View 1 (tube, rainbow, N blue to C red):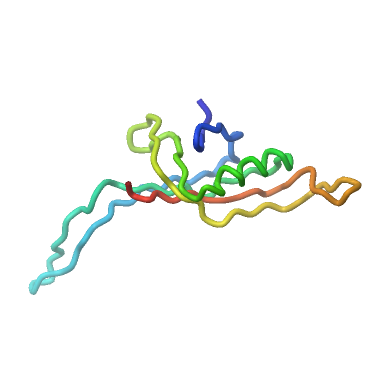
View 2 (cartoon, one colour):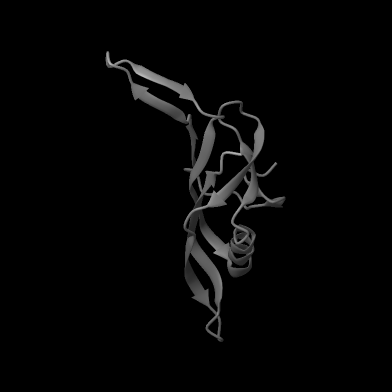
Length: 123
């Protein structure tokens, strides 16, 4: 299985250094004694930071960007909690990549340092 699958599309392996974050959402405050009073809200949520590809063809980067153009996407990745694949609804953060090689028509043929992150919508 690919490390990252978005809407059924298997992405090329990202550069080492992906940082999955697991967040427990809590509604909390402090009582008159200063003790934390709170409760967990929903399930743990995920964020995939530092998804990066040092080198992609223009076709690969365009394909990834077009998949993310739907905004809400279904992402399958290894859950760091269970070490098993999980599929959740996410949305992308900023996407950026540097055009590197350009053909005779001034069209990029390759990109480098392609990056984005994915954030759990909580559903």
